[in-house]
Length: 634
Image 1 (cartoon, rainbow, N blue to C red):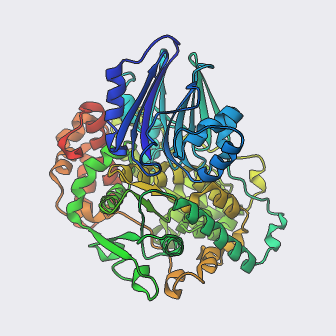
Image 2: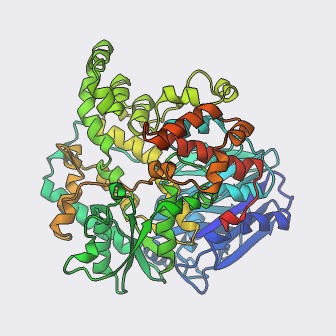
Image 3: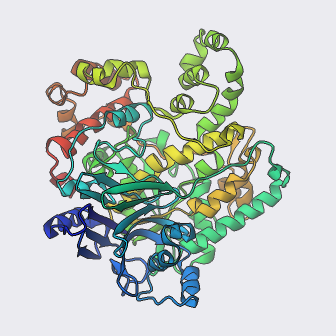
């Protein structure tokens, strides 16, 4: 696990100034505190900070091939490196290290850019091909590891984080208004956008080639689901459950490959409990887990029900940390690390988990990804209920909303009923979006509102595979989840908050072999009736206590509503003041003041909007107005 960055010039003879390359590397030191490395040659400069996990003695980067013509820096882990190494050695390749990422170099020698098809893992890498004078950037299939880039007339700049690119002082710092739309309608920024117009994300399952100023993007992987008429449904539930259990076992087994101890995050639910249960069967070391509790009972999952370690037969150490009102002060540090903000405040609970786990070691396994694979979120149930009503004429659907019941008791249903019956962005947004559009039009300042246009709704949609229209509506929603919310929200914040404390997070559910297997499972076994993740529960029955595999999902949430009603930290009071709001010019001070007063009095729940306003104000301070690292981020 590492942080990587670099510069490739259009002029093949131009060299990168060493102070620039060092600044780009130093600013992400926390991603790799164990060592640093550089490669600086004609037309190319590469920098890396390393967190040593595999091959502690000889695995420093950059790594070159036998004759030095290829140079690699990589962030992540290649879990099938043992098998790949044996195959490559048999083919005559010579290795300089025992590192997992060295296999990429030799695969590239044999297969060129198609080397990515052979890799099983989480990765973002940069490979400089000196004879061809081109740079290859690649990102893993699901987007577990991040990679950003910026293109100028002179060069391509890249980095694990935007901060590396900004440290080179090569790009304009200007807010991307489309990203701001995403933030207040979906709750996060959708790739390839970032909060800055000049910096883009390399999308999951893609690689980029840069040569002489020319840039080309290539998609090498996508998840595909069977058509409604597929015969896969004839496989029995017991057979599916057994096969799923074996797929997960294999994934956990290879995710445990490490030269340092591996721990886990443990909630009270089935996802992380399944991972930890399998870890106890494979690991020869004592497993240390961390659980997060909340001082607010309505959010506290682990305080109200026993975790796996409290059941007979499961003996491992579990540390419990608590998120409380005072943790709101971590918001500046969390935002500094996350860069692309969310309107949820989830960064802070993730920071607390990461900080606690990092005290025990460098690596944890987590249960993220399960809800996307098996339809665990509440909007999968909502869509199943409401999707048939989408076939009714729009006038009928509007009539259904005239009474007070649906709008008051289930406001999200109102927006879904009026949306397109087909799965697209206008249907997906109200399912997961945090705010009502009509409120947003009041909130933004006149100048910003004019720039955003008549509507703040997202003006993009996902390019779906051929045959998408023949998929079951359930898996169409799954595709949107896997391509949008998973990489741009769940995995984005997981990576940033963990690496802030030099912690590697591994995601066995998101091994691409597991993802491809789960895509073939019939929707009726993922959501049976309104029971979410039915097939996973059935698969885990032999491995988990009955109480855990029957538990309903309770997702990790941040207490932003409670924080906004309590005593605000000094930074929040200042940034939400009328003078600060007026100076930055994003929001109408009188509207924010009214919303804050009503929220604090308990008359309205504006918590998610207010945390979004605060995040934008703070982001401006950190990345636009001042953009200097402060004590709050140390």
